[in-house]
Figure 1 (cartoon, rainbow, N blue to C red):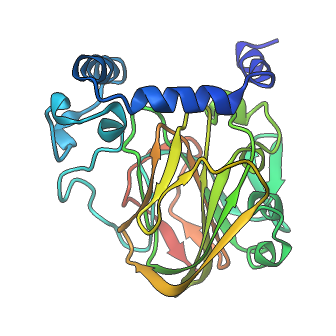
Figure 2 (cartoon, rainbow, N blue to C red):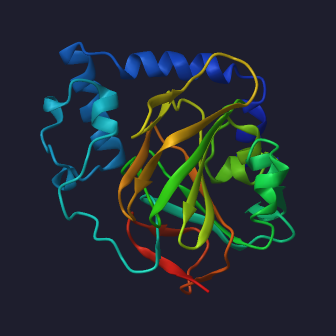
Length: 278
């Protein structure tokens, strides 16, 4: 058995939510010496470039979470033409949906319906469309931005597990992105419907949006849908949400996308051009 498979299997019995919420409380600690020690150790471990940050002084952040979700300097991420990456990270998979199925990793795929919380009507919009998945590692910038301009139509919270979403787990846990807790944001765009799915993961303490603040964790229960009577419109490149600790964004589009000669597992930055709608 490979170390990667063992790592994935060991996660099944873990109390995912309990561990994640405990880490979340620690990350919100505002005791100066505790949060400063954690922030400086994290910067050393993951070689974080604080020169890009709007506030480069690590001790200026009131908590580890505030540091982790830090904004960047104006102009640090130029916005390209066409479809752009919503976040810094690794472009783990991308391409066309195959009869409503998305690729998770070699040998693993999952349905749009499962990803979107069992919504067959919504999944039908993307049956012959395109998708792209961006994995945010701990060292990445953790705010999520709009890959194209759009108007929010509905937000759906889908409860689930909190497996890690790194490469080892995506290769060994079937239906990973359709099993984990996630927030599905449905937008109308000039290119048709788009869903941005913010997938929770092990020790991701919360997911926030710019229009509703912190969303996860929610009390246990089923799928929860929130519609918006007052339109929430965001331009391409505007922030739409953030992760408190790393995770994954899955984008689905109703229209086909011509991707720009990209490679799987390629590093991308927020605002980087990924392709254009055909």
